[in-house]
Image (cartoon, rainbow, N blue to C red; front, top):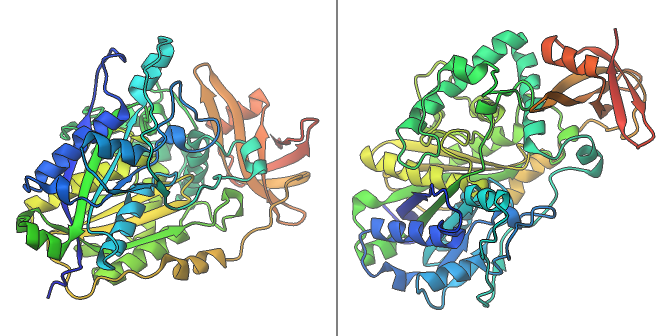
Amino acid sequence: MIESKTPVLVGCGQVTQKINNPMEAKEPIELMKDASEIALEDTTISDLSSHIDSIVTVRFVFDSGAGRRPPFSIYKNPPKSLADRLNIKEAKTFYGPTGGNTPQYLINIAADRITKGELDVVLLSGAECFSTMRKASRMELKTGWGEDPGGNRIDLGYEKLGATENEMKHGILLPVNVYPLFENAIRGEKGHSIEKHLQYLGDLMEPFTKVAKGHPNAWFPTYRSSKEISEATKANRFIGFPYTKYMNAIMEVDQAASIVMMSEGKANELGVPKEKRVYLHGCADINEVWNVTERPELHSSNAIRLMGKKALSMAKWTIDEIEYFDLYSCFPSMVELGREALNINPNRDVNLTVTGGLPYFGGAGNNYVMHSVATMMNELRKNQDSKGLCTSNGWYATKHGIGLYSCEPFEGLWEREDPEKYQKEIDNMEKPEVDEKPKGKALIETYTVANGKDGPQMGIAIGRLKENNKRFIAIARDDNDLSIMMKEECLNRDCSVTQNDEGLSIVSLDS
């Protein structure tokens, strides 16, 4: 039996904007309006906007912390701005927190509140216009974006920096410098040489480009071979070693996506066709050990493992039953962490994306997963008894969400476990002690080299001091060391750590 309060997704819409003149391009709120109108029309209910009681929008990246202010005015209340453009009156307006995990997090919250009778018909939406924003900035043009529509905005979740001060001053800031640290740790766990692992990464990501090529909203609908992805060339230079450019998420896109949710009872009342309905069978939200340097392991994710277990238990599914996946894919390591933690058989003939992933479909800031869920809805509608799984991720493999979807109705009482209960399992894990002023002989656990257009610029190493086994993070500056780190095996390599006059920990390779 389907309970009347069971949450259901009934509409989805996506738009991608590619306009060269930034003064002719639509602003983010307008793209959200377009995607929302498509989502509303997708439900087939002509007057649905009059039934919407809640609008939830994903936080813009330029509104996600200090140092990210855009070259235009701020939207003071994005969900209210969207409501005004859609002529929706009296709707509650909610604004999500920072993180690529946010869309699934918001879907999970909306589902929970719908089943409790706190929300009725919910419109979720998000957008990023980094492509247009960057073009305008380069041309020194002012777009005129931003507004204050008034109204009360309810902020969901909380804001927290993704790293400690010590981590940030040693390179844990830009994701392009952090995810390669996980990658080399994964490489070490697999026992791969650098050359073998680069080929492996190309093989891993090639299928993503095939999917992106067939997606009507992909930013880069281009197939690339494994060799094209893995081989460093002038057009595909190394960014954060061992990642080439084609392995990195691209945020410089203009994309928007929206989803409509309601209860089963409301869907019946309004007459939403059965074939349009997609049910959230299982879900979970969790944080990894927050600080990268305090994580027990850098090659795997205990948080994703536990999150998957909770969601599968809620749905009463097994991982092998699932036909469609969209694993968060900002960088290959995120795909690998998800696949391993969820116990997806690497030899199974199944795509790990329905969109093409953030490097190829496009990495629309915090909102990418709204696209993955919208695409998943359409895939599942084609095969009504199939099952799908989407994961989401924020900061540095830090904040995670998962959703299990199917057009098959959810039977019985829809109820998710309070995330605070199982979060304690992660929070109570034993963590390595971090020395923020390390000195002496050490071993490298993992490392990366940040590259600019002219080659290596800085190395980052995480390791253990031999004297006391304390964890440290340090940067490498010696040109010869950087060259070695790009060419030779440096995992478990002997090194020395010192403190310089700038208060930085400096690592140098022992000969």
